[in-house]
Image (cartoon, rainbow, N blue to C red; front, side):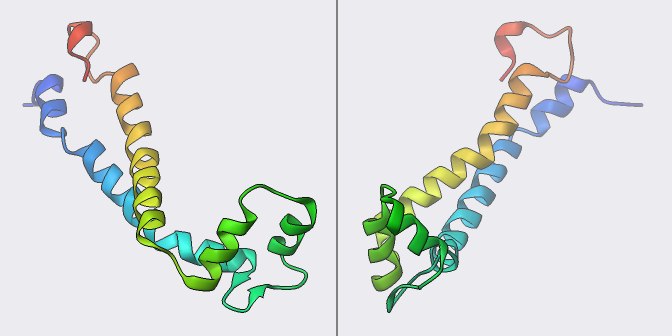
Length: 112
């Protein structure tokens, strides 16, 4: 016997939250690494790197990335990257559940 699709969907209420938490964790861990890989380091901007190209073209935010590379990631940057990662992780799951429900005979008002 298979369970009602709506019941199965109700059992999976935690999936967007788990995806959001995973996205936040990945963003928090990857942010300082990505800044370093771009060429922003403790000694300044590395010659011939992407950061040097960004500096020469006047890309907005180079000063902030340079200070992050030199001094490390502050708490505000960690919080913002975590929020952005959580949104990036949970949004696709929530949109999928909103627009492609498990059962087509459900009430449209109860899609989430």
